[in-house]
Image (cartoon, rainbow over all chains, first blue to last red; front, side):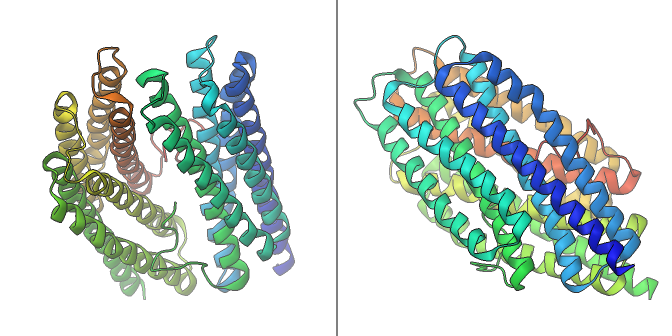
Length: 223
Length: 223
């Protein structure tokens, strides 16, 4: 019984890790579509999002079934609930990759990004993809040190996001309002993508250690 | 035993409804702070967000305790999980009200909004507050009709949000990029606030009817 339960839980964690890998690839393609105005890559991300949504629904159903049939307690219960939360966060990361891809498609064949900000998005995209891959690794290994490092990497993304704003807010920005609006929303998509990755890492730390990092009265104020 | 369980569940729902009322008030004050450049109202929202975070942590802890001690199944299990999800969404609504208030504070004593877009934010704010109050009502009454109506009201918010974009994207927008960036982010905060309200309504419909509205392969693609 106990062994069957552990098998089910391992299986759930694997599905969640696979989902994170899907989302990493989606963000990689979306960023490339954005940087190179590649319509077919953008379309791949857009049509691929249903797979992430399906994976989330499957994970959630199986987690519910596990709760209903096995009524886990203590750490096991915490783990199943963390999986449900994580599936939600990872699906949301997929949605944000989708938003990036849709922006690239909407402006096609014109590039969305002015030359001054391309480098920021190349860097933010690289970090975002790395974060999603680390989410996958953290779920597979339950490595708390790696989960904590992920938070620091997200700080780099936040720094880039802040600098990006100073570039478009600069009085000398020559590309007009429409372009600044695109850049503003895109910047926010990457920033939120990172926040969701951190939220999964924090829940994992909670499961492994029993303590929520940076608790401050909330189990997920950054969500 | 069964009665004590039902009492606990009612208590949880009440706490969640109270949390929604807090968030409605926060968004009301944040919108007024934004429209009138009222610093003290903005500060109230900013310092008040900790109360929402605490309420969420309490709801989540009690829901976990209920799962661990009572191991509910079927509808009862679904209800507790819906409460956990809803608490997360409502906390996030509080964060979005907080973001609006912080924007008002950051620009003080200057008004954030140009005359052309003030009306949009007055309307979006009114609808957002209404949505949060309806979330409160739906949680208290479990009224499916009211939950469905909430989705339609959110469509009005989305329409306003789209029109808002056409105003700032207009070549004749005379207020510069910094102002357009503020309006872009603020518009997104209201839109997401509405999305989270809808997500709570959908989960409530799911609990009452056993069916997720607008399923489409996902239990919450709009989250």
